[in-house]
Length: 178
Length: 348
Image (cartoon, rainbow over all chains, first blue to last red; front, side, top):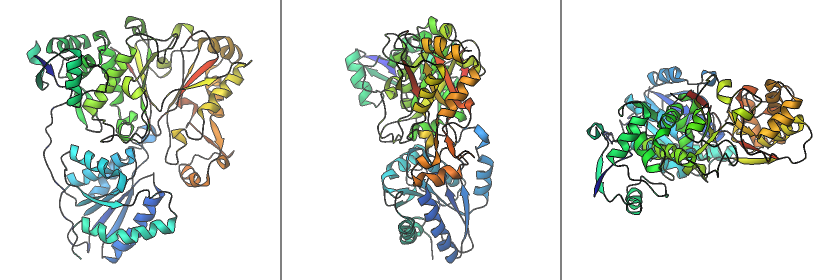
């Protein structure tokens, strides 16, 4: 037997669970993180913004820039930091492909690290990836609300109906008090 | 000297078959035979890098782990790469850690993207990077092992694992051995690729590419025709950078030395003109796209006044280099990953 060295970095992740619960939404600012990828996610967040207003909350939209490369200075980190500073609760999405899941989770974890109650919205297929990515950073039990897969490719009216039907589930994932 | 290494240690049989089994059981392997990373071998590879083992080259997504020279050395030993390639491998890792490369998106995506490394400078011959026949794959030399070392770092340090942190639907062979190719600078009529990108001497340019595809034109009589064929081939509708959410992407094409010198440069002396022709040819009319793609493309401001959508933001995003055998007839294209930029760095 001979000593060999591991090609992996040592694991030093602290377990951090799911983060705080949202409680009542009345009077709170709820941030909805959009992206550049999915029209369906725009329609869903449109519907949820209306529903959040009906709950007494103020929805705040933020759209993540295309890519994170440095062309045209699209990093957007300053804008994102201001978004996090302005909200009490975060809804991040849409986990609906590989790279978009990574960035939706990345931004959601940033919200959790700011102690902001956060729900990650994923289509069914991409739940595993979202949970894996969050787990790698110690958030081993994130709040996820699942939308049907595939979502893109449905007609707008159908997607908006899905959004309305899923609003109660979204609030349940955040452990809101109505 | 070995005591300066900080990686976790395991006792095991270092016979190649036994160690390969061990590596696969621990999730370190890629299916090919693995060389055991013993302390002596890793020390040799760290020394060859010219850096200290605990030097952090960069943070690699998705795990955002610190990638040290020691970890690169361990993965390079496992891959069977030569120790003298360590400076090149470390430079590639440094390049992909740059924000412009968007490694997070590259590693998690459903697409088949992998790293393609174009090597310039005298280092090509010092470590036998292929740039003549079958340069992109098939030439017997260290390039596949060097590419594999890079890919093992992506797997073991960055944490890209298919079906877990990578959603790549199809993948591609380059996800195992990478793509490592030199430019045949001595047979190119143009300034070397890395120099055009701002770095002279020994250098690597790293691209996120969806694969390689051959472009045949066996009867062209003019440089204009060849460039049109290359551009129209690259600008196919399913190119990742025609995606409705794309804004920009570097694209890469290889031209064989005969086309480059005896047809293209003969007819079109200016390299800027060469690039302009390919850039213009790599475009489609907006009405050629399905209607469902129109809103996204329009929202990105990509429909030009002439009604065309250009694959690349500008001719600057088109990267052309010379390599390949002297049988001519073929070009090679490497379609680029959307919202991703190539990175060029000096190898020191």
